Image 1 (cartoon, rainbow, N blue to C red):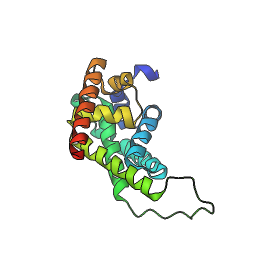
Image 2 (cartoon, helix red, strand yellow):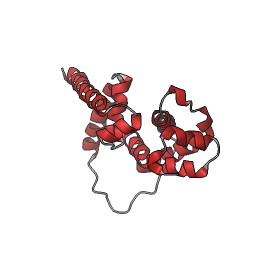
Image 3 (cartoon, rainbow, N blue to C red):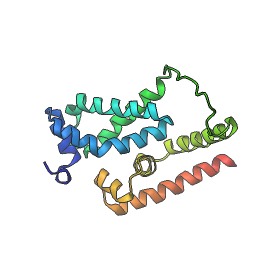
Image 4 (spheres, rainbow, N blue to C red):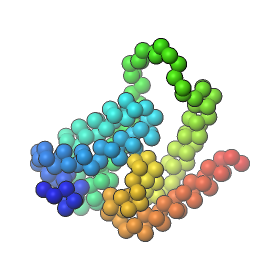
Length: 181
């Protein structure tokens, strides 16, 4: 199986049939972007890694629910990832790690609070964007995909990705500016 010649949807269909090689290829394609997406949402490496594992365990278990007639495989996989991330965010019963013996060079509490507030405002504003613009921005900025990769990932023209990115960022700027007034 040539990695470049197989679509995400075809891989999901093969995974649904129990094809371990297809699953490994799907994992190699998406584990890094899903990790970036989870890390942006959760802000914690360990929880992001857990979300990636939950995502691919769910993909393995539920690949049969993917319907190719509803669209490409990548958005389906990202919906599974989004659910795993939300579950991780809700699971606040993480065990606490031991305190380090030496202080870390991390930002002080006021800097972290301000950064968290800004991140919260951006996330809240993102939720107000139309789904197609939000998805393009999430893939580009949280998953680290280039615009060409986003276009290939979503199976849409590059020009559409650029237009959605530009309009989404403009709309996002307007929403954030409106909060400051």
